[in-house]
Amino acid sequence: MKVLITPRSHFFRSQREAVLALAGELSIGTGLSDVEEYEIWLERHTFDLQLFEPEQVREYLEKAFNNNSAAYFEKIIRIYDLANLSQRPILLALIAKVLPSLDEKSIITQDSIYDM
Image (cartoon, rainbow, N blue to C red; front, side):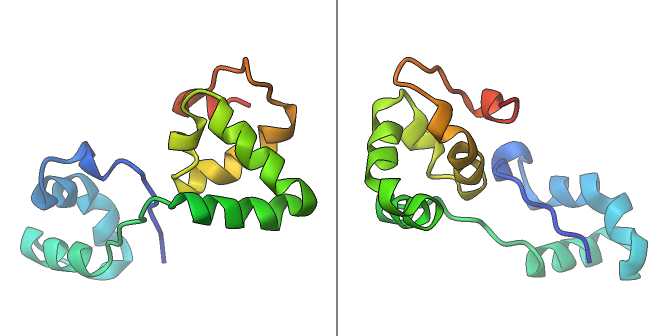
């Protein structure tokens, strides 16, 4: 089973557009033969990953950093846009890896996180 995780559900204008873009991938191993079947399959197998609330970010940091979690949460708040980016579960995992090396003057964007 393949899983596609993306924070960019808005990339496609409609479910049908997503189905057409993924049609080649869906036809492998699913036995589906037409667009309507693809739409039904995709609707049943698509899940939206919700953004974390601040408390969930804190909980993640507690598990990752134990005693230093409060300081790291404050660091996330102080670095421009990091609080916004940390709401995305996948980005939070990447942020946590580099958080100890960041300072308040760090400039972080969604794209730069992947390069760190």
